[in-house]
Image 1 (cartoon, rainbow, N blue to C red):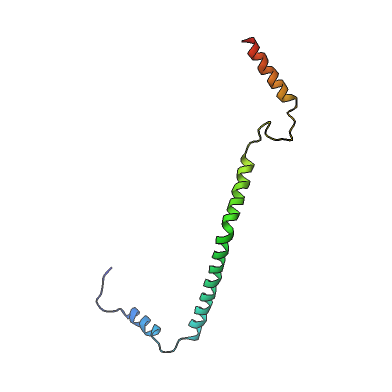
Image 2: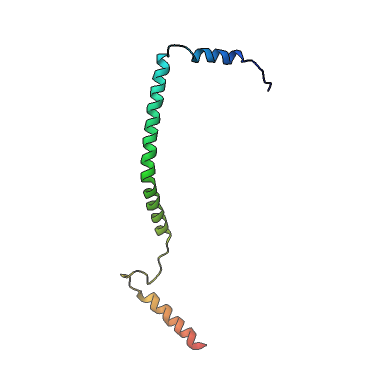
Length: 98
């Protein structure tokens, strides 16, 4: 890439168009639309910043609770049932034989 000391014709042309004395109405309309879009995006960002941490926390709690194993005897309402008695009697029998 060669560097030149003088402005290129493209740069001069752009400078002439930008430095016009009267602003073009279509450019003003575009600028107003961009400013409006920017304002809407800023509002969305503010909304996300306030609601996203709570949503992430709720999602994390849900995911962690769904992955938590259900261990016997951890629920207050659960009935241990005959399977726990059978395991305990088999354990007692194995201890007595040794």
